[in-house]
Length: 314
Image 1: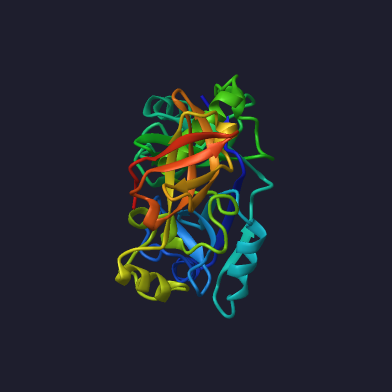
Image 2: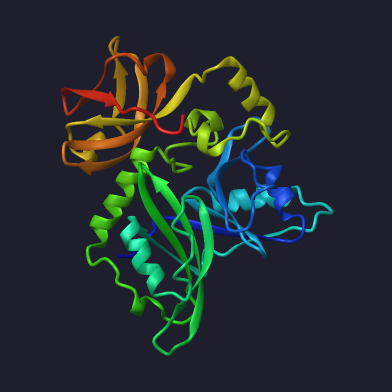
């Protein structure tokens, strides 16, 4: 039922100015985000290059930033650098967090039944809540929860305290962790949810991830990196875009494969890959001019067809 979230990072932001402060340093609407809600966002430098990416969760007493992979120390340094007189404190809670995930509405409903919050609405997309779980000694522990949807599949992320009561004894966990991790990775790739430092780097601008509908607000006003993003929006396109690619080869061969256009000019490189029934799928930053032309790769001396899946959240 529950499996570990790989490479999870968690930042906690407190202080009376936290919502306004985060709003000024990310690409989505945070200032008006009501408690119990979440949004996806990029954190960029002044040139709109990606520093971090993840979800911002609004609670009554704090905001939290949940990320996969990336440079946690880098985003902490970046956000703390601009605090002058604002009432804002930002710290990492990653080391004290055990992050788990569950897939599907039935699993979420089953989890809620073993909490003290069985009527929680956290099963709705982009909602968050603090759920109370009971341990074997009847001690209670608060667990932060986030509901999201990847590739039309509901997921529930849980941030459990590592120093609290052992509540996992009451919750079934997956025996085959590797299979659960592959399922998580398949959903992530089909959703085109990038790992910063792997699928995106500091050389990429946020719109190149093409998660504009879910992670970028074009009406929120000024924030760090807003001007270059607005210029790209006015141009109507980016020069390269993150795409889900498919191939009949195994995932270990697809990973790091060079994607070529019909004229053998490099179109991109596969940076994430996972096995599926038909072969493998992956993520690649593809030149915009090559997205709608036949693509291939030369793997172990053989020409292999590469196809691009229809994008989500572009």
